[in-house]
Image (cartoon, rainbow, N blue to C red; front, side, top):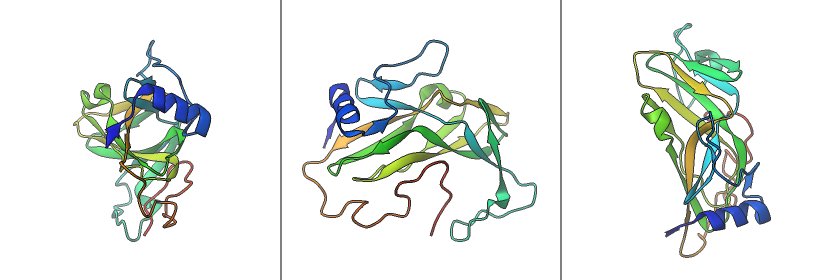
Length: 184
């Protein structure tokens, strides 16, 4: 597997709609950086957040997920309570080529503040806005800024296309827009 450079990411975004909207260079003045980097793409978090709360003593069950365990907020800033968690989604819509696997890492600016970003790999031929999991590991409330960088995607090109892609098996999170909650 080879990690793909900026020139490949740019071409795939422009000619094949791999990332939409696509920001062709790093934007960083007064914001947490986003846009094309040397070997990746720094994505922005949208302004919709689902913040987990324990007001109703809800239980988080991935097999029978209830939205009673969180509140939805929309705006330019999200404050995640101490030792809590929020779901959000990327501004960008991704269309992953058949011979590519995408890995996501959190931005160091947030990591240094105790905010951990998790995204499962984007599989070959998956498409949609990416649901982002953000954990506040600190004992303090923490801010996340909408429409600014949240994570970096790295594009790994396989030796050959897989026999079965995410689209081939009609994956349950295909074409998602907004925050997608757990599905069984």
